[in-house]
Image (cartoon, rainbow, N blue to C red; front, side, top):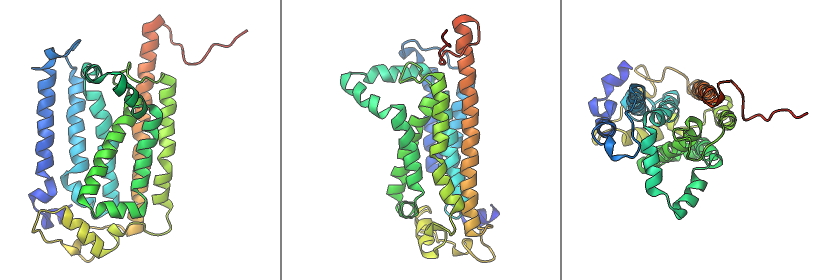
Length: 305
């Protein structure tokens, strides 16, 4: 990382505009759960645990979309994949865990009408969420699509926001922050998590087992310089020595870096989904205890006869 600090200034490394935006969001959140809470029907004090989740979500999103990882992700794809893990597999579920249910309920009540309900039943359905995120994620890693997006600041930013929205949809059905809205049974939530793990596998396998390097962004110096120029402040010279040479930041050969990226994504996805399955089972058992004081699996019908 020392090479990055030697070649780039504060703005390029730390993305202060993103940091300021996330701080503002954090301030609004704490105003919402304290000073403005009485404006929401059925609001209750937000637990300290939820507040910590939200702060960690802001931090994870900053690491994913800003911080020195932003520059590093333009030099090595393994760092780029780490960015995606923080943004879509860590920050997103933490946001859903940190935002109180009464706020989600207020949003649903505010926008509920016959037209919007029909629209949301399509957009917010588990099947739509399942295929939207995994489809967008897989399409993003098609070499032509990846290189095209990386060479366009506007398109890449729009795609990132679209991925974040799709990740919110996907995680909504795993976390179930508002059980009354578009619910899945606990057993189906577990199956839904497994389905997500299966659907993301082809994209990871493509990256891991490709016989050659896939992305010109990391192998063609001309394209790399163009991509780097977009993420640096105006007038900053692109240090070409970072891609190759004695002062290179790329400490792995390009194909090995690509393989590491795929492995990182698959491993981190499995870890986050594993924690989520544990979270679902904990909710499930708690619900069963509250219902009748015994541990039963209500989703499985009792044997007849």
